[in-house]
Length: 177
Picture (cartoon, rainbow, N blue to C red):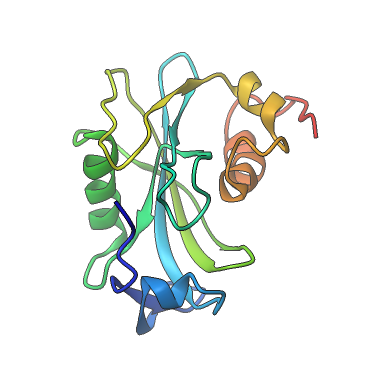
């Protein structure tokens, strides 16, 4: 499998207003064209966080652990449509109640994304699709002890430190860098 470099993404301003369109290849080639994505952080009732393992064929951060659900908003989709489509595609989850966490701009050396981050609590077996290399629930302490060790995507680490960890009851977790 490979990512479709010709897939069309909307281009947005920092408020999410559509200002154009570009291909995945154009958005991921270092152009820094701002394009919208959705993230869904899936917790269980024990407070553990589900992470997906990115497959080696991905064009961005192959083989790293990442947010449970993450994907691009396609042309013609709104945030909720994309969130539900990605949750169904990646984890076969269709019945969940998303809670908005934060919308922010994330920039790496290759791209800029307008991230729409959400969380939900699910107590059911999660069945990752073949789009992923599997996944599992991690304790907050397990995640914190692996920050900065090239285990997770930089985007996940940023979101964990600045969105997740400040939204949970784990505000005093020490992060080993």
